Image (tube, rainbow, N blue to C red):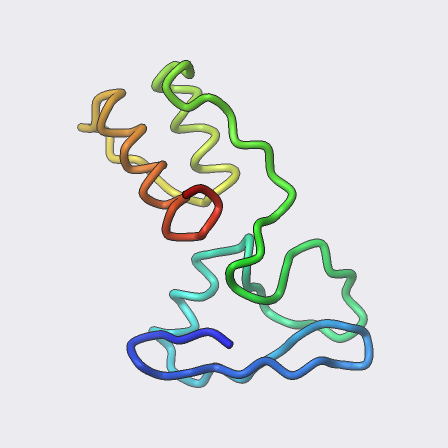
Length: 109
């Protein structure tokens, strides 16, 4: 189950093992699809390399964010998290933004 702004989405298992729910609210759909490690548009028969339920940590190696250059951190966040870090953010603020996103996804404590 996933909850967005008090609305609960219940996932139903499909014959191919995918867990699917209907999301008719455009804002909720956009929010879910902004987290590709957890959600994506269902296509029957598509292989599932992404966990379908929230709270499941994907098979992603999280690098030492503080040791990365700012450019490398931005590139990793964009490719792995689909998170764009503001150009005005310095290194420390960028690390905080990425850690905040990772905590929000349940990938780190």
